[in-house]
Image (cartoon, rainbow, N blue to C red):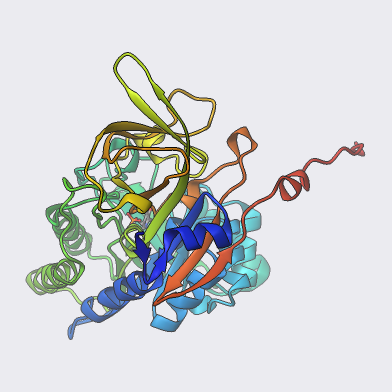
Length: 420
Ligand SMILES: Cc1ncc(COP(=O)(O)O)c(C=O)c1O
């Protein structure tokens, strides 16, 4: 039986039910430490900010806090989890292309240190609300550096028509934003943010974005004390993915930053990075129980007790995964299977052509590298309950998110008259 950090998969399913999301805590800890230890420079201060959208819950945020990482949030909901985890406000960055007034107010009330401003309209709202609340806040402006990242179009964020950030070409508008900020008594301009996309396996795109941003800072003469290079570092989903090892990626980026700053003769006090996927992706596993099977003209299906409701990525952007049968780890491959979920959509196929031993009802199907954007994008489609999430470490397991139940889903099913 396949074990995750010393705990057998059948034991986990017996204790917590199926389907189940399992994280190997040692792998998460190791990734956080690799970033914190290697993204360091003698020329400037550094900060590793975990993009909490990849996976968030109180236990996860407590871990990041302990290991010395910061976090970013992109909504009131993600901020609410951070507040529940008592995450230090000084180490929270608030992102988003359409922050609502109530979200900005929530951030100001919690004294979040930094808001990353996405557009000119937001400058006005942040200034007005910070003044109304008399609450100081630092801001970065998100620049779209227009660097093509080699990844799926849904997760590329720096194309010319991206919805995120302000184009690097709009120099006058960027300067206008900074002037407005500098005139305000509560908001302080700290610098720029850029993020080129996600699941990027090579470092060239990051280096190109750094060089372009440093040239921009030099040419515009804007004084920048903080520069945030974003996240997007790829992980291994299948054997075709060969990400740059984390320590090497960090060192390459630090070298590029130091060289670019020296060449441009500019001084930046602090550089931040924002990994999400690469901290939790490979640490996460999804366990399912096989139910029925079906043979069609060309395909052999194995049906599992989850699917696109707990992992929308294959249906959303053709994400690829690998799997094994945890209870038949050492058995020979007997055929290829379509791993299909139980949702009422033909697109609810988690893996096409998965090579597996003979699949039978009751087998435990384990999918690798499901730790990022799996649970966090999960839905209740077909009224499926979101799975429980457990952390395992050296033979011990603890539940960090409870399985949803029909009863908890029904808490929202209210009927009441609305006073108009
Ligand atoms: C602004 C920003 N920072 C960081 C990230 C994290 O990216 P990843 O999880 O690929 O590291 C994202 C995700 O797309 C993002 O939009």
